[in-house]
Amino acid sequence: MKKNNNSGSQKAWEQLQKRTNREISGKPVPEIRLGTATCGRASGALETLAAFREEITRSAPAARLLEVGCVGHCYAEPIAVVANPGFPPILYGPVTPGVARRLVRDFLGEGDPCLEFALGAVEENEKIPSVFELPRFRMEKKIILEHAGWIDPARGEEYLLRGGYRGLFRALGMDPRDVIREVKAAGLRGLGGAGFPAGEKWEICRAFPGKTKYVVGNGDEGDPGAFMDRALLESDPFSVLEGMTIAGYAVGSHRGFLYVRAEYPLALERARTAMESLRGLGLLGKNILNSGFDFEVELARGAGAFICGESTALAAALEGKRGMPRVRPPELAEKGLWGKPTLLNNLKTLAAAARILDQGSPWFRSLGTSRSKGTAVFSLAGKIHNTGLIEVPLGTTLREVVDTAGGGVPKKKALKAVQIGGPSGGCLPAGLADTPVDFDSLKEAGSIMGSGGMVILDEDDCMVRTARFFLDFIQKESCGKCAPCRIGTYQMLKILDGLTRGKGSDAEMKILEELALEVQQGSLCGLGKTAPNPVLSTLRYFREEYEAHYREGRCPARSCRDLIAFYIIPEKCSRACEVCVGACPVEAIAAGAKGIKVIDQEKCVKCGSCYQDCPIEFQAVIKVSPPKTGGK
Image (cartoon, rainbow, N blue to C red; front, side, top):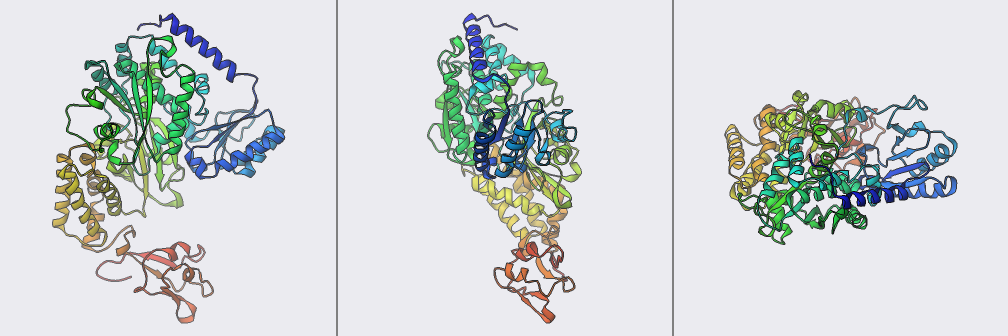
């Protein structure tokens, strides 16, 4: 492979490294990295930040306090990583203002690591034998999120100090076609959902003639329960921008667009600040690293339409048009923005490409499966102990993700299913928990990788209601351009609505399946083609639950409001307790004989407040789903 013979680039790179080391490096001092991404702020990180600043000024003025992004452990926010010389970096959370003051005073000041607040050591150390790496640390392999939670997302110098932009420097010394060959050899597949080989897409875009080409980073993340792209931009926007610049060099583009939904104000702010930092370092704009290559990135805000995650709809929105997909071919790589060849990749794909050019394709190919190379980032949401972000090698099983990384299902409930791939993904039952998480295995099981959202469902979740929830989202987000998606999803939703109320028949079930297949086959874009996945996968694995709804008028999960009822068990009810009475919003509960509470079924709106608020020592309120034949 061609070596970097550009003496101007080499000299510029060396000068940049010296400048970075001069500004950042120095005598080791205690460092506190506090996560102030959206998840941290929602949990009070800004108040914790103020407490750290105040106590550092008073007790440890030499300490360095950094605002960083998300390390992935969102369940324990606010999170801080404290690195005190002589100790390994230790992860703490939740770090309240009071805990923050103690860490500065006792750990930095007295050498007491305050292990009672620690989640775990980032690496093992004999000084604190009672704290070891979390199991999650051992199973994760962070490539895309390597710097997330460790660097200040506003300072490009910190990214450089951790090895950032080595990939771009290497790429600028190569022939652009060799850069593409490296990405192809790595086996990187698009991490935005479709899994199309990234290198092939780059090659196709380069092959089309023309002086004007564009690179688009797709950060229009709209899946319920998904927050991977947001966290990446809030924690490490530099890896995305480096990947975009490499892609621009490879395909012959000098202008890029970073498309981010407007609902992510902090991600937009940090991306904008990162761009300014990179321009000041000579890593974005004119004559990057004295190589003669120009590349500029413009930040574009999406208006929040889910359909704009589809490539052609996103391109239309960037042009100022209504975000609606168009018939393909031609593909964007041939005729995209303003009729010019356009390369569009998900943010995670671009970040991974930067690491491939840094570490080389053999390193990347050593991770994953035979057909799905590298790693994938997943957001864990729903019925799981440790919500947050994880990055694991492709091929890791669903069971490992749920039990080891996620800490399992809370309240000793049984895992029922994992909804993976966003609203257009499928629900895989607990019986398939040993399925490897990769593009091909998930497709075979009836789901898709999607952008990486995982929603964990337990025994209390109704699969009919779950399918209805996701289809309702998709139907509302349909652009309405093609009839199969516009009308078909609406008719499917009407059938699911009836099922959740105990209505339906075998004939309607047949129609539901036929509609699902017709929408899948006849829709214009990926949204419509994958819209039936939640229905088809739940029918495949949970058909008996559907049948219970319309044949027996019963919801086995006791979740559908029209098919449940609440009762109070006299033997467990305390006469003196009035909690359920106060909790009921419609005054449907009153004291009956001997002070025992009774629920008036005519007044009850089945909100579940009495069920939720009944003291655990009594558990007098029960929720049932009686069949049509009667009985409580």
